[in-house]
Length: 222
Image (tube, rainbow, N blue to C red):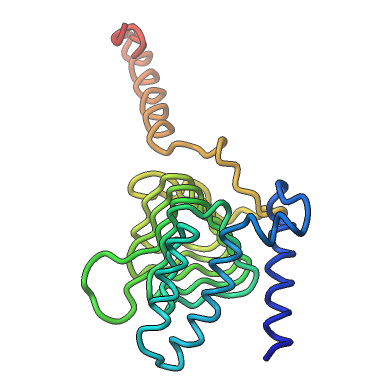
């Protein structure tokens, strides 16, 4: 069991080096990454939770929320090489299931939508990246290698290899393959703007066919 624990610690530290260019040395990673602290302690509290130990797992989770700003319910199931970048304000609910190689940023909520019993929190499959401030709510499945844009609110299932953005979350790209697994937060398309531009283009075409002078939206707004 000790060998397994040491393996997890080494794997989690290596994951930080792989995914965060700001990680400069081993001392920084060990002492300055609250996501690592929260994850290591969660592995302990989750084990106690599975053993049906009362009170202590939740109390450990509560203490770690105070110390790190990250709240992980001891019932949450978390896979290998999970990385919480920055971490402040992250909330992970009791029946959340997280696969391998998942990356989430600060202010992310993996929460429920009410007082339902049973599975009521999301499942994130392998390779998912969730941008800062995103909310994924309810018993839904986020497929493998999905990218969730910053600030999005996702309440429906998302198929694998997709990018979802907006409130509520809308799929703007499907079946892509990103070799580096990078989420470019500053280059995520806005589905509403895309739709408006498409409609504006179609209106211009109709006006030209009818011989009506096209009026730019900017002319009306000025």
